[in-house]
Image 1 (cartoon, rainbow, N blue to C red):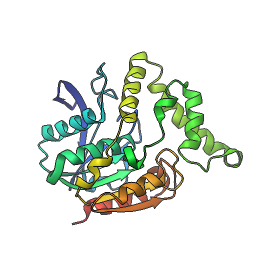
Image 2 (tube, rainbow, N blue to C red):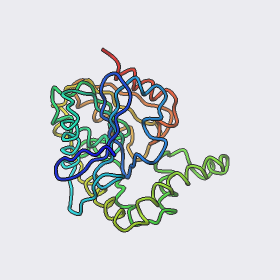
Image 3 (spheres, rainbow, N blue to C red):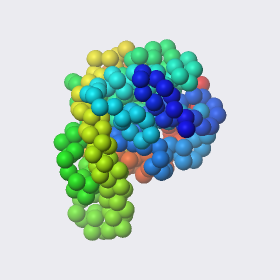
Image 4 (cartoon, rainbow, N blue to C red):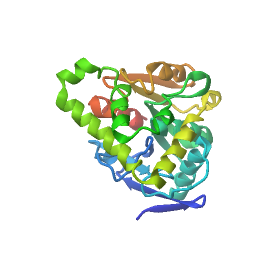
Length: 268
């Protein structure tokens, strides 16, 4: 099992594909064993992708002390050093986008390109929805709340018109929530991750991130609203922004999303 022994923990990671090197940083509660993951994206093998489980998640070490976003960024940096990657691009999704901002400030010239998906800068630029406030909900209640948070089009009329799609989406969120709620150790770990997320603030470091950056978001996302992306766009020195048809999971909903991101990552 590919484990990087760094910073006193073990980080589970996988590397696949060929081409420009990309570190993929996933979102809250993620686990590479849960499919589909980034390696299932059509054409992704044109890139050398490293994806990993954050500490506390999946097959990486679960620690029992308070953490900050700096800890997660330092983990990512240590993983890159373990791989011997002296330069790479970084893609961060949701919580992973927050980590990516803190990592980008550490990487400096080692960072070739940066893609930020459905995420927020925190601080004066505004944060994403405070998911820690939902941590005490059971899996069913959490799934119902996430259905509309993740895509504000999914009101009662939408559910009545799309009962099967609504059922599938609720089950998607239920499965994710149960995996990190039914085991007390995993639940405590996720609460620790959510606490670090709640303290995220990268606003002051944004002007120092000079790598070409693509900011992506879904038009109907109430977890990381468009205003947060626009705040980053106006503060990052070399950034562009794309909106896609979808909510927080726009990469699964709009077929144009991944091709646009890969074109950006493969650009000279």
